[in-house]
Image 1 (cartoon, helix red, strand yellow):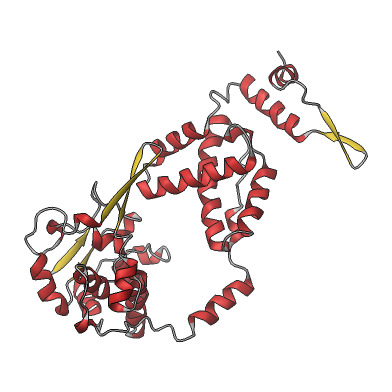
Image 2 (cartoon, rainbow, N blue to C red; image 1 turned 30 degrees about the horizontal axis):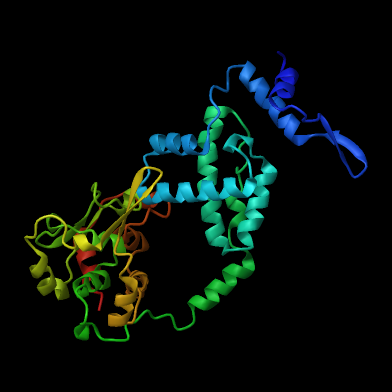
Length: 332
């Protein structure tokens, strides 16, 4: 069969042309299927992926953290439900644009950008397997903050955002996780990095943030050693020498697409605010703010906090441990 016959057999009743505003134009769906049929004839299309199979292939290709896979799963299933199509390869550019508008009407621009970025990555894999159109190509860039939004964010950031605890750190009590809060305060770590610490991560003069099967990391740049602040000595002594996870009760799991998704400390936000007056994420903002106020090098700040380098030049050169010690001990 030629491509035209393949389409008419596979999609019976689908017309070559449709009437739009009184004029007959090519049916975009017929054109798309015609191009797919051409790809099949040329041997470029070997399998048509379902939602589940696309997620599986993308996971095997990229080996994401469970939390990232959970994001892919939710984003793809929500998009497919919105499009009403039977499988990803049937979705069109119009579906992608309509979904972008749908997201913008229901969430912040940054949240919408994250969802579209997930979908864009999935479609990269789909294009490799099916040879179809990359319907999300370039869309994440269109969701960057507008000038107005960026200006409003900057204005808000200037308004008394000190991230200072309402209760002095010496008076923190009333929770079994006060040590977790103190470590967040003096290390600038992410909540999951502290909640998932094991006794083996506690060394004589530093804490090791490393990948493990029990606690994955946000990015490869998250791997780092953090000097122990002088005010953490007593806290660290209580933790030193423990075997395995220090706070295993802070580990909660769920299953997404047959993959176990682990969260660390996600139930600590409320007790943290009750004890300290801050959310766990606020400690990280406070940490970065203090280091900048002390005029420490921005690249060193990023490395200490587990961020990627801001430019190519910053990826060269060694790491000055004494400088990191000074940075940690400047936190008060």
